[in-house]
Image (cartoon, rainbow over all chains, first blue to last red; front, side, top):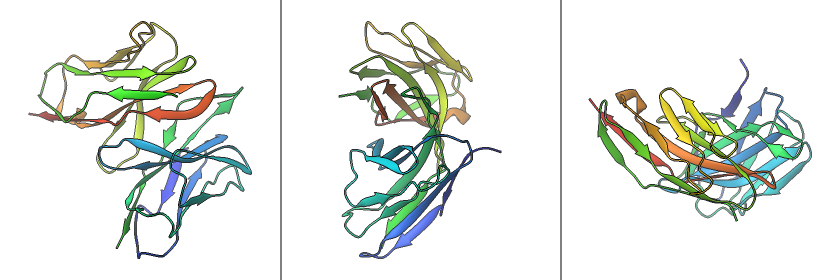
Length: 115
Length: 112
């Protein structure tokens, strides 16, 4: 079945450590996204990528980094510079054609807790 | 910039009650509008969408109509079930800005 796979589902990290969240899609979508979800705040965009080897910052990119070396993969690194990293992280993808992005398809999320 | 405002929750209803969750938007350009649903511990799933004015999106008994004159996309269901308990997000995307904007989400709890 086609879809988006995020791993790990749960992750615990000590302060000062970098962690990388995996996101893989087999939908052949061009565009991929990372969102952060905090209680009562909806989803906030961290980074997005419309094509391989290219990505743009979203609203809250500070303390995060991404790469897009393959179409299927868009890993997110939460660095020690991110001051409040405990959150639920959602990866999404969409078709990107003719300058317009369609609906988003989401993974099941990764919950990061900093101890 | 683009933004979405949806009614604050939580919303608690009895089974078979009528549901309305309000959503209004601000957009530069012509948006497509979406409702997503999130069940506990999961990612978001597309519930319905509308891509032009006066379109009605519908799915699983839920409906929403794209109202350009009032910049609204309210979600409705005539008779809710316990299984509809979830968080609902209104969202938009425009041609000139390819990142999707989400409302804060509305938590719905349906009691038997």
